[in-house]
Length: 471
Image 1 (cartoon, one colour):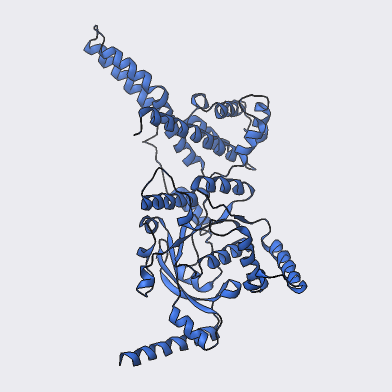
Image 2: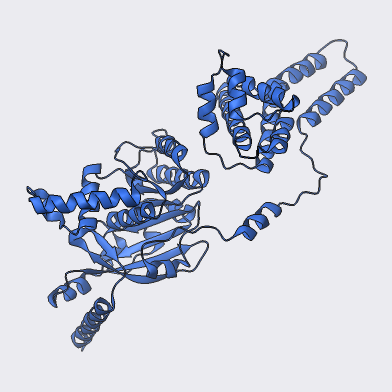
């Protein structure tokens, strides 16, 4: 059971973290080529640094206010000179604050500042006022006039803390219209034109994309192909692997890029094969060097993922985060119910996508029902939680028709047909498309015309055989 003390500590921790985010926003506004002095003034006026409880942030905030009052923009350089000798903070600490990615603009930062001011009032002033009221009520000399006066003062203090302007002519659509006028949002395209067309052009920033399939269908291969393509296009990619070590992923990736079959990596490679691998490495460095980061930690939880993402975001804004896969993430041990654990993890990944304004591609298992019933999977087949279906912006499902694959193999096709189903798409259409899976090198491509026609012929033969069996 949570006590009042626990709640107060949580609120205090939240307030300290909120003040840090405010300072990050101020540093972002000040670090522009043309510092946004008006935006900084607005934030610091909404929640004056003199009332901040986080000592380090309070010192930096007061110095920023002092610089503003002197007519100087509180840039990280100017502020760093002011606090370099202060024991409670340092220029290095400020540099880390200044390089932290934050997506608050002056309007949203001011709203957050007002909320923090109210929380600070509740934590610091409210207990004192309530204690004074309590003392007044139980005083033997209390009168209705005195009590009314105390209540009036209490109301005025609360109103002063809640200074959110309600009579301002606020236009919540202005920023959105300006962003829209600057151009449509940059969608993350997949490497497959057929899938892009099915999705309506790609996936939006801050989307949680769930990729689901039964084991050994091709989830990891598709995720690795997509991640490599994003990095080659200039996106900063973080690939969290909870199932395979980075060495195994490297083998799969370089098998794909070098066209060397996976099976040869179990044996000693020839000089020619090494030559191809080194050439592939040069190509990889040229196209995606420094932008493809694999984290192979089998004990990852949401908070650890967030910390790693923050470190990578300091280098460049994140363009794609991949999690392979959801059910292997470490859940909160305080939650005993498995479905609730998965729901909490799913929600955490959704928040991660929003925090870094980039798509999160999360792999997930399907239950055995679709396989047992020999049918196309549905969103309701997602394993262990309906919350995944609710949180996801896009649900992409892979399906392997075993009878069709066997029929294709009988006529000499080595590649497998995969069906990709967009079962949910919050900002676009749903539908399906075919992909061509060359399993021996873990490569997934758009199917060429010859492959399409031969797969279609195999499907017709299967239908004919099925019809004859029914007769």
